[in-house]
Image (cartoon, rainbow, N blue to C red):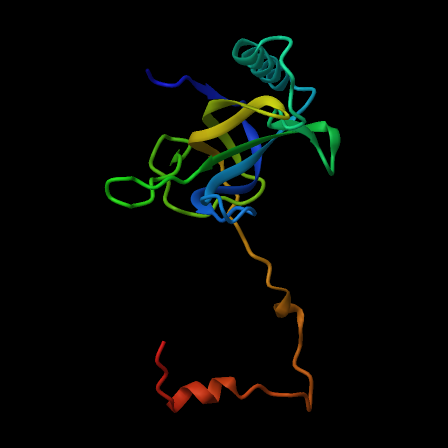
Length: 190
């Protein structure tokens, strides 16, 4: 039986790692595809979404289930407070047991449903996310995890890495690295 898919409201993403899996803090776990979706808390679509997810929790675990402190993958933003609800999505990258190859992450398309071109999705991009829910239980209680399966990029903000070194100017009489000269004529084996 196929697992049920859900869709989150259009939101702004932060820390989007849906193209390539990133290493997790717990190095015993496989890399994961992940992102945070920022939704305006007072918005009607956000409220409807949260209520539907709370109802799904009760459907899976019961109304009187002991909830873990991590029961829901959403909460107020640490920086903007209750005005923004942050919804976290994460799916471990598994390996195909037959081939040993890493399985692909969520399918990503652009606003016109064309395959994504591979550009890194930066903070501030607006996405629609499809996901499946993993309902879990443990000694500390039970909860839900949202596992992304597909994304549609509605507004794209390219990822740009700031290079603070560009802000420096040459300093007269300062040290000059000779490392570049070492590699000009030398053969190097890696």
